[in-house]
Image (tube, rainbow, N blue to C red; front, side):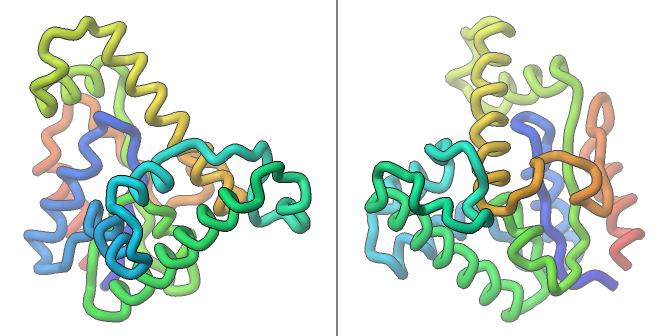
Length: 201
């Protein structure tokens, strides 16, 4: 039985809802934005700043896992801050995994916990499905056109992909990096959660 589950997800795919449902039904701890809060508390940095760093595009064109990448970076102070936050994030995620069985959404948790062999999920869906979910989940999206919502979705996905590549050296969303890729297009998340719980058990 898997005690750790990590979830990577496209924006609007329902990955967060899936994670919450799995946690509730399994009795596992659930971590998402809680990781950001914990980093802010440990580093004494503003939570808004930590969130900005964690969710922004790294400013380098190659992974931090490649040797000597520091020497090519023009703003070493910024890179050091990014690295310190990532190291703290890794420590916190490891502590969370040690504490109890849990579901962790995003934050490169699949890579950070790779030696513990979690069930690594990646959740994706069709553009139309993702647009509709984003429209329903965020009131501020109600008056936006599909094109405007999709533009924002692509921006966020691009940030996530760059962040993942920068810290892991792997391609975000590539099926080779996950145990199960889940397509939520036109499927009730509850139904998917029930099926995955059988796999976990």
